[in-house]
Length: 251
Image (cartoon, rainbow, N blue to C red; front, side):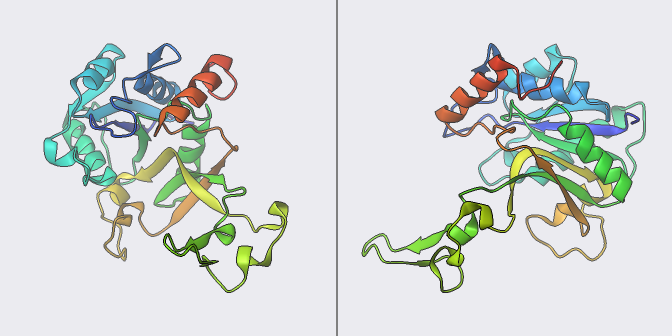
């Protein structure tokens, strides 16, 4: 696989669940260092850019020989979107790259607060993007017992409940293994063309996920192989996995 992708690592300074989580030590290293290193090791990635409003994260990027983009405040608040921040990063570095970022150049979006992901995930996503000619590829994990058919609507005052969908509780399904396959985005990777990111794909309706384009594909991560740091339990799980060295294939 040729190195053709531009990887954008996104990490805001603000976090309510785990303050400073992007530079929080995880298994002896800043959380974002795991993502930056994985992007640099991916065969498909030609350059790595870190976009943040956090000086500590930008300093980390420079220390690891990644490009650093100082994200403006209006793209770093709670209402800022992933695609707007990624577009800003691509536009900020494109002119300075020794190679051209054309409409079909793969852009890989990675979250700085995901220190654990399969070692081949980035390359698998870019390969599917290029082989299929689609607009975007996202990684998913198969849902187990937290399946939408087993969810309910629960009245907080009366305690009365109704099925989330349909009329039968649990969709009429008793055994977990009988549930139809369902998948949830796991935060491991998003790979998309520059054209999709820049909202240049024809026929796509406006909306928060318009940057995925019109031809959307997915790849499946092994269960539990991606850890997205949202709370302290995630920190403990990530550290255990990284110290054990099983899930994060850096070797």
